[in-house]
Image 1 (cartoon, rainbow over the protein chains, first blue to last red):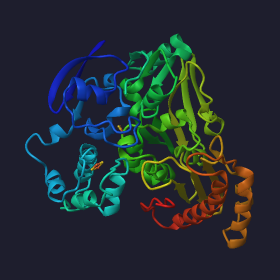
Image 2 (image 1 turned 90 degrees about the vertical axis):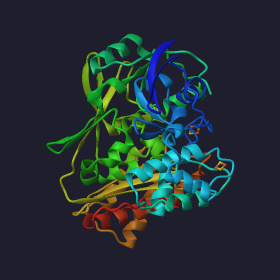
Image 3 (image 1 turned 60 degrees about the vertical axis):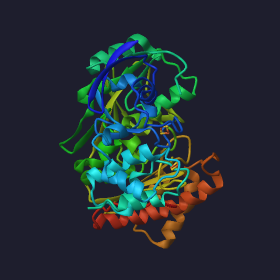
Image 4 (image 1 turned 180 degrees about the vertical axis):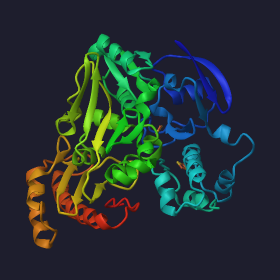
Length: 150
Length: 297
Ligand code: FES
Ligand code: FES
């Protein structure tokens, strides 16, 4: 066991991990943030997407020990001070059905809008190209993101 | 899913420290950079290193430098960093374009181009660009540093010229001096997170000097020298394009896998070569624009 520190949603936490612990499992089971989900467990579906040092990454592909002294933001952190505009659009436009993909898609779309407040539909599709949704056919998700344009 | 076997983890701060560890552990050590391939390999295959050497603590490996016409890409530079680099976009547009087709943003934010060539899957998108720019791979071990030309790097599917104890510290690429245009055409099953079914990179100068490379169409990415020889000095017309397409069968040896059949790959490679040649040619005079030109997108 090694002792590491992770800054999760603004709070510095210390915990013990084994080198072979996966970051996604540690965030969910040891740190209690349940928004990132395990879909494919191999970097393909995006359900586990989180912000690591401000960049979207797939937490199923990262060892927890790699995140020592790094900053992580999950959906819990994004909506700490109430829902973001994007989240409200998602709700108002019924963007999701089962919602399993929603945390990852919200992170990916937030990253896009932070860098590019006026994306084209192609930009949005490219930003979400690593996030799969089994329910919606994507249209209501894309519509909500497009409606956030400045 | 947990990884079922145990290993040690170490995060050296300098290249010297890293190569000493690699020398000590030999084949029992494995290098970890972005981890997007290796963590999946740890989960899903019998791959069981005794120690993972995480090189992300070595700051000097995270730089993109360009001086005296030579681009240096450190082993920790991610595809997202390459895409965002104006230096790369202006001077090495084919690396920029190929990088935009790798997986998706969440993977590109983590995955490195050096990791890509070390994993050396036949479909690697960085292969054609590095082959036509004739990049050098800079390798270090505890007895010194050496350069391996990218043409000697890929030795088989997932196999490279790397030896026990070696650490790839980066890539070096000379900026081509002649005015030129480039194009990377990738075929995925859809536009998004997918490996290439076929990929072709083209570099062409104003005076009709051609460099052409394919990926995902044989055990390793290859330069199409015989097609280059046919085309060199000639401008493109229908007749010469047809001759070039006929030669494709001599250059590639595609297989059938989950993504496409070998017959389909053989056919589409010819179509893609033609489109890539024409696009590269057009870009000699037009400014580079962000179209991915992914067939079937
Ligand atoms: S669970 Fe991580 S990408 Fe699917
Ligand atoms: S809403 Fe069910 S997977 Fe997207």
